[in-house]
Amino acid sequence: PSETGRVLSIQSHTVQGYVGNKSAIFPLQLLGYDVDPINSVQFSNHTGYPTFKGQVLNGDQLWELIEGLEANNLLFYTHLLTGYIGSVSFLNTVLKVVDKLRSINPGLTYVCDPVLGDEGKLYVPRELVSVYREKVLPVASMLTPNQFEAELLTGLRIVSEQDGREACNTLHSAGPSKVVITSINIDGDLLLLGSHHKDKGQPPVQFRISIPKIPAYFTGTGDLTTALLLGWSNKYPDNLGKAAELSVSSLQALLVRTINDYTRAGHDCRSSSLEIRLIQSQDNIRNPEIKYRAEMY
Ligand code: ATP
Ligand code: PLP
Ligand code: MG
Ligand code: NA
Ligand code: MG
Image: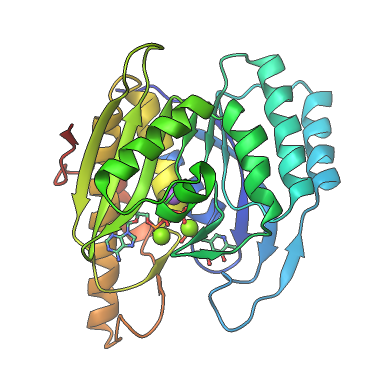
């Protein structure tokens, strides 16, 4: 399917390496989308390195860019994509952006990766959790939390698939009709859970994709996953399972290439976080071979 769109992507920029906008823009462009990036930060490198330098955009500066676009009638978007947001004031301005974009295109799809933390550790100020819960969820179309984020946003503990499915239900009732829990750790392997609430009064369509865990730590994969899910779910609006199969299959091919390249160079993949081989994987993004299947519940 050739369905495309115009995406406003508000995410981090790093000079070196692929996280945030750097890991989202290229794949969306490969899938045929126009992508207009706003860089919420510009850092030398991602924050997993021993040090980083750079600048942080504040909410007023974000709004200034939106005003510049509006003054020239350039605010028509089909999609808004947001990832890591570091402060309540910036998040509140993002909410203003959602309203503004919907006043111009009421059909705007807002894809929100509610980046709060991972593996039990918060990496944003705690006040953001309630802003996401109370103000962002009601306006989000698709939400892509990880296990920890889904727990924070629902107040539920997730230790089983069933818990994950219930968390999806709770998230739907707060707003988004599409929810993908991008990774749940179960017995050392990973599970992606998807849930599409198509009709009010009907239970959501839910599925799982099981993903063998590669013994390495990557950065940028969460941001890439959300970008791919946006790209594919817009092409298959009634088949979130298919969109997730395509997204996971691209991503896993990329991870295998990443591991192989580092290993060939004599690197111990467990010793530090790996930079993903995004550009080298362009064929896997444009034309993924489906190797990971969605199992419907
Ligand atoms: P975010 O941090 O954006 O909220 P997240 O914690 O789910 O989301 P990741 O942990 O990067 O982000 O996982 C995103 C996807 O990347 C998973 O669905 C999984 O397919 C893949 N992935 C990440 N790390 C690995 C790994 N070690 N082995 C296999 N797949 C992985
Ligand atoms: N944005 C910035 C600036 C980062 O430093 C990082 C990770 O270090 C990320 C985003 C996270 O990327 P992901 O969750 O996709 O691995
Ligand atoms: Mg994770
Ligand atoms: Na995620
Ligand atoms: Mg992440």
